[in-house]
Image 1: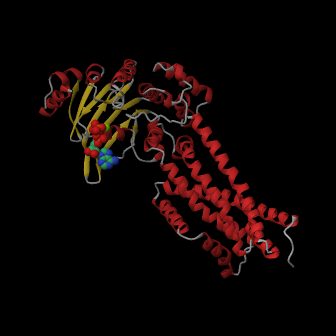
Image 2 (image 1 turned 90 degrees about the vertical axis):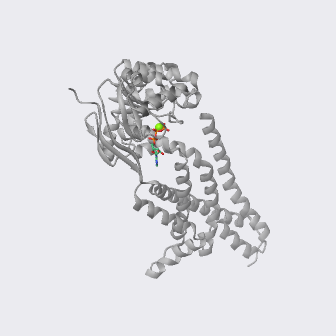
Image 3 (image 1 turned 60 degrees about the vertical axis):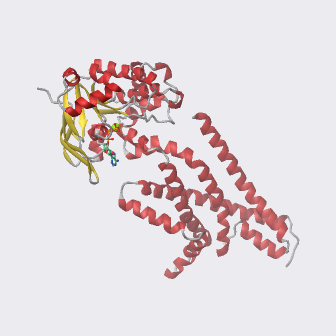
Length: 216
Length: 246
Ligand SMILES: Nc1ncnc2c1ncn2[C@@H]1O[C@H](COP(=O)(O)OP(=O)(O)OP(=O)(O)O)[C@@H](O)[C@H]1O
Ligand SMILES: [Mg+2]
């Protein structure tokens, strides 16, 4: 049973890393889209939409990500539905991250001075046109650092899904470590893989930021 | 008699329990320049902002170029195509070039082709004397230049009336002249204008009519000469004295 840490273990880790990447991407895209809508609801003048958004954000932000994963994974069981591991993991992380994306972007949108709204509405733009052409381009600049920062968190947070047996790079590491009894070496690899995924994100973010600043 | 371009009848407006406008009535004829003066807090900005629906009113009616100012979003937009507004703080869009600032609304709100919008941008920039700044970003311009671009941006919508809210108050004294000159030229070209201002010289020499706002209402109004040379109410007399001292 016990074997030496070797090339096939590394390949196994890399396949786990692949799943980590896929799960991260799905989380960012899904969570980003829902989060964007929730952010818009949060700033809308409709009390109903605003209220729903506030409750959604508050509820999710005060729940540990682990609980969200459990609830999504085990919840459907009550109705006799069993979600496969990947959709369950993805759904949980999408929901969880959407609340944070929503808050980051709401803050960015609200950081654009009110007179920008007034000037653009005085020019007969619709609310959506104001957002699209005047507010969001300015908000994006503000939101970029926290957004990328949170995306790095998303990559790292995917590891919680290993608790329900989803084999991401952390779970793969755990399995190999159990089989090889070389936890330090294994987890060093796992940590290196996370670094290789996350570091370029920060670098790219800094690049974009600098580009924005030059153009200003 | 022709219909006034702007007509306010018995406007009331409160913020919570504080009444800011009480029974304000005012007519502005086509081609007329009306200067609005008055103490801080007398409701000048609020009145101006009601004219293009940036603030809602509780009572009275406002008609602008045949539109009744209501609160449905669509009607408000139709109205705002006819009303230009220039703010004290310029409020240019910092992420857009001068040309983009100007052509945005014609392209988006009026669905104008890019070529045509650019043509308009060139024309209005020439009008405010800033043709060479067409590709600059707002933060590369002086305050006076920014304000002139803001005026050009409003002009690009070909409004029937333009509202100015203390547009020189944020400027260094040596820059107010260039903005006032542009406004004076606009007036000469027959633009209908409502100008909230502390510039008594402008009110006296450019405006056809002057309005003194006091305690949320139109306290006294008249032609520029009568208004400044023989003010009737003690409040206006005192206001004119105190602003001459300054
Ligand atoms: N959003 C608001 N909420 C509550 N009160 C307001 C608001 N805006 C203005 N007010 C109040 O309404 C009154 C009139 O304000 P307004 O800005 O119209 O005065 P103004 O004549 O333009 O003064 P200034 O010369 O200082 O610009 C003031 O007492 C002001 O405090
Ligand atoms: Mg004011």
